Length: 373
Image (tube, rainbow, N blue to C red; front, side, top):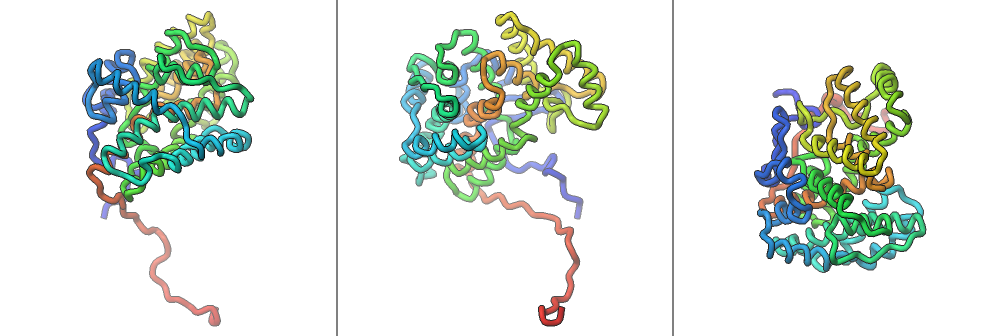
């Protein structure tokens, strides 16, 4: 018997038609479409339609799908009731874990795992998640949450509700591209958690709650926040090289570099680097981009590691006015597209996911009754 693969590395756990990665070449595709074509070329709504319904929409289909999303931009009474207490007591990802679960109580299709019911739930979840994040932020800051604007898509409405101000086209386009880049990524930890849950024939809300709980972990979704914390602690471009060498020299890691799959640059980082520079130049403050570029150069020199999706996402989100502790919830806003699509795919061709394990405990031994011990 061969030794088990630690962390299931290189183990094929499921078949999927949703996304694919070529780690050696640095390629990512959604249903056969290269991420370099989708990023900046397709809207988030188009990509959600692609993942959930199998094809890029034409104009009429996109208009109808966008209307479905617009009509779903409200949260149910259970989530509304829980929200104030959660916002008072819980950190963002803790809150999101609870609030996503609360959505399931009021969903009219909660007890139906059929294809049509799942499609309806998937649209609702994509529409509702940005409202949960913005509502949480409004509740904890005492701000008034603006109503969604039917003329805006997912990215525009999220910025409107998060900041309280109507977003401009540049900011909206930048966040929209970020959402596209994060929408799916094969069998990552949170997606695998969702599929394991769905494979028991549990419902979609349970499965995506498992995904949110998994994304909460700092080795998965929390890296973008840690990147920003590191940049803030260094403070200036001049201090980057020495600080990075000190951190790496002490045996610590710098989040945002390296990847379990990619052996070259993460293709999503290519887009985010450009967005970071463009948004910084537009704002007249390129410090975060310049610090990030300097850090990238030093890490490459010392460790030979490429940046991953989390690295430049940090400076992009900062330029968009998103609070640092909401970086991972924004990741979830995007990845809900992929999670829901994977749940639908699992339910459509299901088998219980039940891997084996290697026992490394004590060998067989005799039992001694308590009276004789």
